[in-house]
Image 1 (spheres, rainbow, N blue to C red):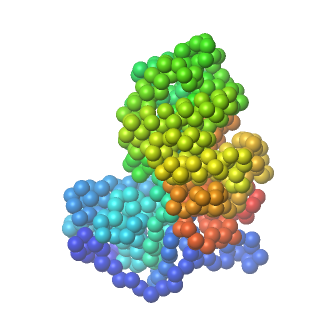
Image 2 (cartoon, rainbow, N blue to C red; image 1 turned 135 degrees about the vertical axis):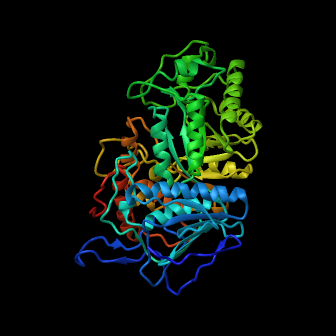
Image 3 (cartoon, rainbow, N blue to C red; image 1 turned 60 degrees about the horizontal axis):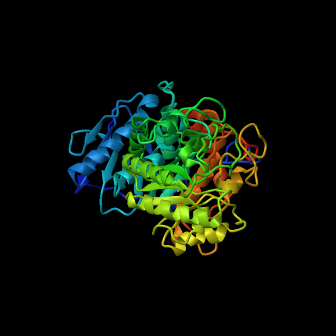
Length: 544
């Protein structure tokens, strides 16, 4: 296919900005006017900051196209090339096209150009017209985020099944509509949490979940590595944590990650611009550790391993010298393994400890975490202490309408110089039942939780005094007491994770409505179908 070669000048793509209408979503009726939902002609989740439809037929990806990459420096050029290869790997299986990835300056017909331009605005800029695709960003991460948008402009059939079973689709025109998109996230921290302690998930399953969340521009995976039911990370200085503590789970079996396994997960996540945040839950939720080392337990007697689902029935001996050796060793080894800036030290549901003992423990533990060079995150109960390490981050898990002391404990982090991650359980905990089925999940967090409820909340309007400036971001946890594999996780998470992802991405003050979101979500579900990702077809929407 003959296509005009685009020129690079100073590493920046020169494109002609055509006139058009700025829209959130362009939609057209499918079928009769009485049809409940509309099929958008352009459907992107999460919605971009601005999207302008341009005149013309759009861009048709062809067999002779290439992906051309550039950056201002050799390092940036290499980073852009890595994102280009990621994009090519997404597009090759279903198109059957070679799609070579070439540096700028080569004699190649560039259908798609990716450029790192340090002078660009935050986020990314995406231009599509009949001549090709131009994607520019100030960083490789920005390019990667733009790629997630670009893939949603092509037909859903372009998505290759995650299990590798897809075949070339010869009967599809790979057309992306003509658009100009300017986009950037609301929050720097856009997270999901996977509980691998209640039930264990293999390295391959965690990698798959990383790909799941990256599609929605989430950039943090919080791994809940320890709890009463299991200890999932190798700690060389305390080997029985995995020998004994890693042998059980709620639904049977056990398992743990060697240090090599954990590093593999961290590196894979980094290739998707996802930061791993590891959590060691202290001082409660520690039965797996107490069963492994009696000296950590009050009275010095080991507990039995535990497969139940009750909470609040365990805590370490907060005054024992052995406990503090344990905390220091675990934090040191965890920090050495984790290149990201955060470690999570739990701090929730220590129901048997006095307020004084709990506050003293989390203050000292946060200082140990900070001394390791990491920023500590803790569940909002940790805010009971007024002596946390400076900059400690609080993670709010109470309800949209705060109960008891949840609000003042959360505000305490801000008053001590930290910020807050919002994860209100009644809308962001994705293991809550759907309204129409209780096959999996739980309902304790004011459940069940609908897709609309997961979408219809504002992180800056929950805790008085914790406003936009005080928020680090948003996270959607999934607890796995009832979930035995990644298929169960995906069934509970999707499509509600898309709701939370849009909250994390859409700019403050943006007009969000579930009526506008619903048709985009239906179109997004077609991509999940193509990827082989299971989800629940709740009757809230008119699924096709």
